[in-house]
Length: 272
Image 1 (tube, one colour):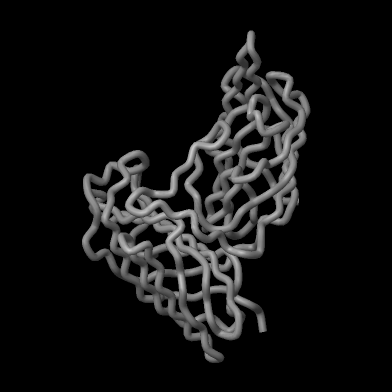
Image 2 (image 1 turned 90 degrees about the vertical axis):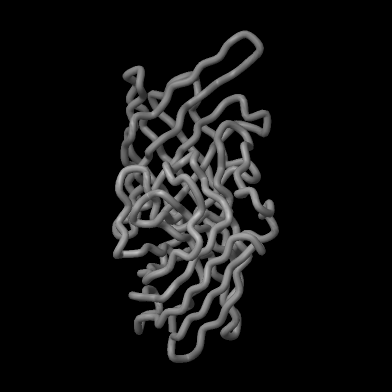
């Protein structure tokens, strides 16, 4: 029987996001003898787009029985997610799981929502994502016209993150050259670039510079922990093909006399 440990992508099928709205929950699960631990990351707004619930790296507990009945509860004592669902026979998905999500903060940086939702609830569909233990290859364009051949190799940890919450404030950290929405699983890996910009040809994910939750994969590759030379990638994972949709990022090089940056145009990296 397949384990349900791993990175789960949850969406509310009745509330597809329109422009500026969010509809995604990531649940990082570790199952041992029917007990579930891990973390949940919530980014979901109501149909009006006027309120939203957010919570990053919420501590999660729950259970799953022999019949596939799954129950999860995640909270940082401010934001809360509760979910109950019945897994499909393969234990890799579920449909119409009942949930409630209560968030004490809005997050206007990524949504026009003006306040938190008091009691958003409804049904969730869930999919167990394939781990990002793979190579991704493609050519990305930059805003100044460069065509960079990108090869990324990544590895997803098997143990969910724990202990990185910051109370009422979302666990958002600026570490290196990008802003990370911390949650899910840590990711490590290496990067190779050809026909690159700014003299950047290789790098690796430094500590605390790679995270995956749901379909969100944020990764930064640097030559060392000075973070002066490398590249960032803001991506979404296609749940079906595993391809990475790159929605933001850049190549950069900084020293005492020179600054260079080349920003990526949205593009796709194919899973090998």
